[in-house]
Length: 357
Image 1 (cartoon, helix red, strand yellow):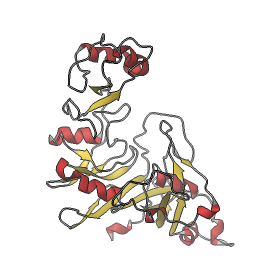
Image 2 (image 1 turned 90 degrees about the horizontal axis):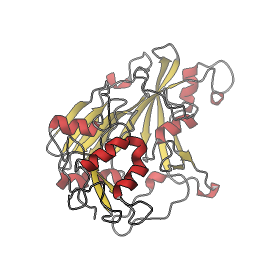
Image 3 (image 1 turned 180 degrees about the vertical axis):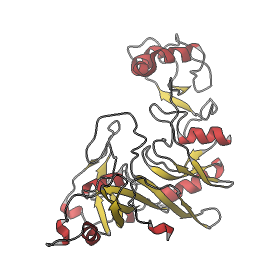
């Protein structure tokens, strides 16, 4: 059972738990934390200890003199010095007794991460709506815009989380990709318009094996034996009872359907394609990887197909990926639910998108 935090939510932020070594070359807990995390906020760490904001499992303040081994866990509130507001705004799509559906903008992280704490969707909403128990049921990457569902009520949260765990939620995304010059070989020989060429390729389903290593920003492809190909990873479901599988299943572990919605000139005159993406699985960066593998990397993606150097956010060039719809059968009422983003992708070609007809 997860340990309950001895500290309440403060300014929309949960206390963070840190596991400590019981032995080691450090005389005090403060020495260990300072050596491990001092490069992030050296003065702030000491100040938290001195102000009594670092506590043990019972909520008792730990001081800079508390010896190593006095406790196995400590709790503290994360903060970022000089956190700058992000010039983007979320929109509430729906709210009821149990759920909150929100249209997340590009650049705003779903939950506190890295240099963003107050400037995260979760903390903004907790403070704006005075809902300290609010928790996201799923997440979107910081660069991705679109629908995110939050649970308001702890007693019903598990029922909604199981929908995602058991792949009982249908999600559709849209993206815009710059088109390669010239006709694609798949269209055959002869002069063929680029849009007609692409139309011959889609719809299609792409499957592969994706792995993500903790601490590495990009996911990686992992090869597998030919004999293990041909299996649909989204057909595998966790057992309803008993222990879950702990050994990896061979073959592909990610699957996405890609459909072409339209082609045309983007806002800068570049030929672009507008696509609908339906993920059958939920691996990290799955859609971004799959589009890059098709030679149609999503516009303004700084991770795929090539990892670019870190740079300040360019708010004029958001990642052209949008979580358009999210639908499921409500586990409490049995009602069909669907939530749709009202946002548009800036690079969408000039023809009217299909959902407006």
